[in-house]
Amino acid sequence: MTLSLGEQHTPPAIRDRLDRRPSASYLRDFIYGAIDGTVTTFAVVAGVAGAGLSDTIVIVLGFANLFADGFSMAVSNFLGARAETQQRERAWRREEQHIEMVPDGEREELRQLFAAKGFAGADLARVVEVLTSDRRVWLQTMMTEELGYGSESTNPVRAATATLVAFVVVGFLPLAVFVYDLALPGDVAQPFLWSAAMTAGAFFAVGAAKGRFVDHAWWRSGLETLAVGGIAAVLAYVVGVALEGVA
Image (cartoon, rainbow, N blue to C red):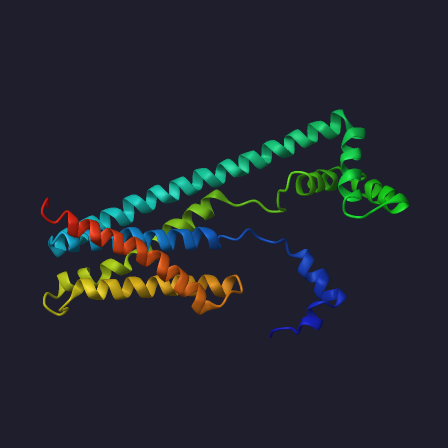
């Protein structure tokens, strides 16, 4: 049952919500993998179709792209997320050293940070006193207020997994009709047109889903993603047509 806005802000509801630690979001990783997987796979399909090559080549190159490019993206995302985590850990250790070696200077930093927020006089002194009375709270406050780190860090493995799964699952859609046509030859009259339609649907669906998560109009977000992905697909097709003679 969904609580009303007022019910969500009663003392028990607030306490329950705050007791549950916020978790990192992997929406960006999923959207990134889904869009890139669809774009690059359809780029292969469009390029090969534009060059007039066989459906078998479309499938071979498409699957090679799905798994090789998907794994490469996942590894890159893993290393990037891991670097961010290591950077955060380094900043934490540095702040620990600063608090240990120059506590008065760190208190002054905290005082100035909260003075900039409008605290003054006894209120400002009390805020600094309370926050510095607990070493971990002090550290976390400096990480957030001075260095701009959030309360939760991304898990590199989960980020990489979200990217890989989205890349392979959504990126398979442009290939699906060619696989079906290979299994049952002749059932699909225009596999490339069906692939283009499924790709457009995938672009729109991913964008619409993103819009739901970020409170944007789902149709506008879907059309935006469709437009961006469509540009990449058209470019790939044009290049394939231009290189048809070479193939």
